[in-house]
Length: 522
Image (cartoon, rainbow, N blue to C red; front, top):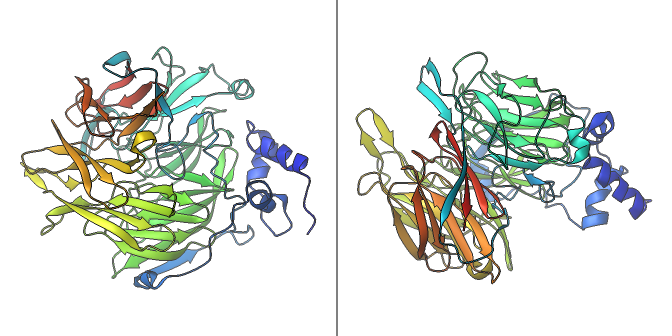
C-alpha cells in the first residue's frame, strides 16, 4: 500500500477541523476502504489500533439485531481519534468521548470563595403537558456547551455571535445562546417545540451541526434533531422509529461523533449510527437488543474508546459494542436502573470503565458503584452504598447514582469522585471519593440535599485538586479533593440537577426554574 506524505495528511486534518462548507461536508461523509486516506490517518499519524472484533461469553445473554438501510457506505470508522480533545471548548457531555470531564480547570490560589459573575434568565414555559409544566432553566443532565468560535466560523454565520459562547438546551423548549463574558443573549433562541433535559452536542468538525434531543413531548413531533447553526434553522428531524422495541422516543443522551459517524442512544432501546453531512444526517445503521426478553431504554450518554462504545440502560445492563458493526462485545449487569453516564479512565495498567446504579425497584437496598476492565467486561471491584427510593405523596425520588463520576488528577490521581442519593434520612445524599485500586470509600461527605449534578475538578499550581459539585437544594460546594475538606459553599439557586461546564476558574451551570449561572472560584 502506498501511504500519503505527512504533509498531505496534515492538510486533510486541517480541512477536517475547519469550519465546514461543501468540501468539509464531503470529507466527513467519505466511504472507507483500505486504500482511502481517511482510513490511514489513525495508523500513520497517531498509531491508534482497532480493538478486536471479539464477542465474550458474557454477551451471549444479549439478543441483538442490526438494521442497515445504507449498504453503500462502509461501516468501518474512518478515524479512531477523539475529535473532541482539541476542540476550542466543550462540545458534548463531560467534554469528550471518554466522558471523563477533562475540562482542565485551573485556580491561581487556594480557593475560599464562590462568586456569582452573572445570571441569565430563560423564559418560564407555562405549557401543560401530560407530564406537567416544565418551566425553564435546565434539567438533568443539562450541561451547557462552551465554544470559542474561530474567525473563519464567525464569518459564516448569518447573524451576529459572540466569540466566546455558551449554548444550552432548556426546559422552556428553546436552545439558548449566551455571551460567556457578559451573560447577555448572544443571539436569538431557536425554538425546538419540546423540553430539552439532556446535554446537546456540537459537531467537533465545526460543520455547523448542533445535535439536540427532546426530553418529553409537549407540542409538535417528538424525537431528535439537527440545528444548522450557520443557517440558524432546524435542518434534520428523526421522529418515531417503527423498528424500535420501545415506544418512548426521548433522547436525554448526549450524542457523540466518532470518525464519520454520530452515535446516539435512544430511550426507545435503540443505538443509532448516523452518517454525518454538513447540516444533516442520514441513518447508516441501528441496533436493537433484548436481555432476558426485555428491551430497556438508554438515558446515559455513550462513552467511546477507539472503536468500542459503552452504553448503560434502564435494566442495569452495561454493554460494550463494536462501533464498526454494532455487535455486542461484552455484557455486565448492575442490580438496578443505570442513568448516569459510564466514564472511561486510561490508567497505568489498563483502560477501565466506572459506572453506578440507582435504587428504583422493590427489594433493592443499595446503590452499586463498579470498576470494570473496559476491554473485557471483567469486574475489578464493586462497592455498595445503602440507599432507598423515597416516595413523597404522588412523587418518588429514586436513590443511587445520577451523577457521572469524575476521575481524580494531580494529588488525587488514585481517587474517583461522585455523588450518591441515599434517601436514608429524608432526601439526603453524599459526595463520595473511592480508591481507584481497591474500591474502598476513602471518604464520604454529607450534602444538605441529594445531588444529581456531576462533580467537576480544578487544579492549582502545585497540582492540588479541588472538586466542585451542586445539590438539588441549590447549594454549591467546593471540596479539597485529597481529604474532602470543605473549602467553601454557597446557596445559589433553587435546584441544580444539571452538570456544570468548566472554563478556567469558572463554571457555567443551569438550575430548574429560569436561572443559568456563571460562577467563579476565588
